[in-house]
Length: 225
Image 1 (cartoon, rainbow, N blue to C red):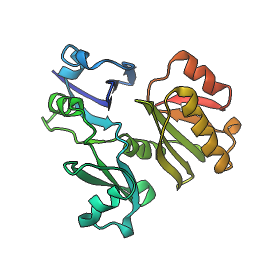
Image 2: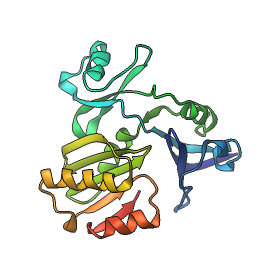
Image 3: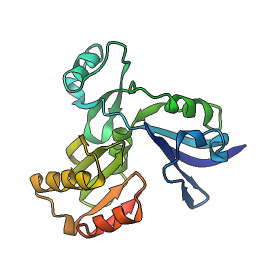
Image 4: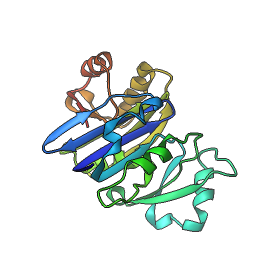
């Protein structure tokens, strides 16, 4: 079965979620446990565009003019702990003129299973990339001057902030619960002198009703993308 639309899949250690955009309609699954993967009919189709995001904290963003491919492993090891067998990759980030260096070696196999199962219309396999990569891409589509994009899964907040085309922050934070994740969001905005009351926040991960209401107490708007 082939679908000309787009499917965006987010994978974390505890499960996955997907969003399908087709014929001017958008449908989101919310978080699903890994055992649903073999019964989800949406994952048995082919799509015009397939995006697979992995919540890996093993990431760093390097200015493009400083990046040297042979030194990628050393660059990543300088900011996060990586194992001897961890595979290190990189991808260019045109929005901010940087290169993201990352490892997908976080002890999961779900992303590989999904990449092998959900193919593009021409039968190609999508590359599994860090959640932060897709968050940086999302900045380009946001019309606001203050652009705040967040994701939360596996007890870790992923946060990207820019003012216009100037990237101010691209990082992850350990946050055992959503309240702690909110603390880091507000701490970052205070450091950057950004007022949440006049800024919307864009979330790429599913939010439950309580989480959304909590954010609405502080932000101009809460948008799930």
